[in-house]
Length: 572
Ligand code: PEP
Ligand code: MG
Image 1 (tube, rainbow, N blue to C red):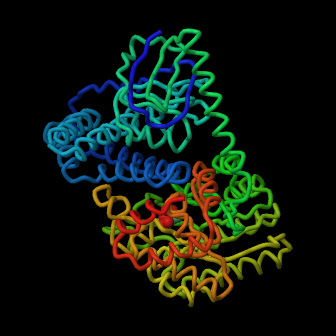
Image 2: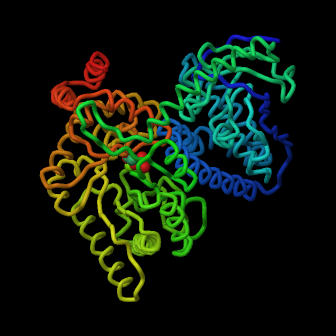
Image 3: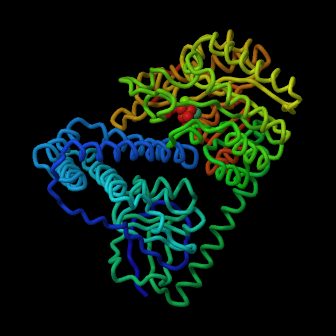
């Protein structure tokens, strides 16, 4: 038996066969090229493909894990348009006449070394990201695009030198018993992912991976940070005991997750899931979701050269609706813009894509896109008796809502005329993610059946903080009283007109925010599936009048920090 001490990163006990992750090494051959223009074109094509992959990963990660993980992939995409890096690549191809692979290898390594030499932890940590992007580009250029083969074929304890975000998202979830890395800190990507998935994890464990045979039995104690290889019978028995206790605790949280979220004094709210792929729906139900509060449909449109056909869309929506079996499902219409490649949509790159031609704003010039989506949704819902709630993204003007509603009416009438079944239950709503929508919520509430507050964007637009820029990420706090006041205004305006309000930004999964949101009267909390058990548990600890008092107080505070400190002091 051997033991090592690492840092605990995600609690729980994992026992199982070791599986050592070794990222596929790509050998880069340096070649002289005659036609530099053609080589540059090869590189540009690979960059476009990498951007498309990163978009899909960001969308998937946002749905399955959360904003934090998604932001990592968005940051990776930024490296691909970094002027300094592009200048190095141009120099290598046009002046040194080397092949694209060699240009990528030398430029990205040079850039990573520059970052590592800076006396700043933030920049040093980015070197890892630069190398992750480098590997992605090299994989694409070499034609062995996926790392699919490097995933365990059976449930295992995954041991690795380090895990990049791209490595971690490619493992099949049900194959991960636990994660352990030699490098990385408790706030590394590995730790974030492990906590989101609810698997035990240890980082900074001084293992000599080459000396560990595949399938040797390993125990990971995510509470203490201890890794044990080839345990004695006694150590094994003890680990099994502790694992049983941990599983019992977890099973209890998950089993009560299927019960309603009701406060101590009997006030109940709906707790539903954010999903971005069909696969997320079952996980959401297993975690106790009472329905879907945000179905992000972007994945249908990304990484492809033509619009998804009506039939293709119907198939996807139908599968989601069937899985939900009559539970409510809020489907958001397409929300993409100039930061995403979708050649068939004319999404030219823009200097400020988050302030540009995107989401519902596309309706004027491309009504066909929304119309096709609405038709597919109504047809799929009509066939499956879905409780469909259609929701528009990034609304800032009343005419956007009126225009989309008219389009929905047209689609509905044309289906009725041809005798196509349409859903009996249908609601029409909008996201509140611009200050304009929140400030005019009393007008918007007359036009829709419900609101869902998107705090990720509402925070970005209220505080003028780019949500994809890691350097200012710490400023993007939904606890900022300016954001809280907009949330309060939205809920009050909707309730005055008898409309319900959900919240589907990351804020809904923050246990600290629960008393504010309950106190402000939020009707529906929507979040990544893994967060559901703990948020339901948190809701059950509060009394509504106390939450109302807390909500009233925080609205008067001057800073986000003051709000958070006050909440910490008043946690139940
Ligand atoms: C939001 O903005 O809060 C939201 C839920 O939408 P997305 O994160 O997809 O922009
Ligand atoms: Mg948004």
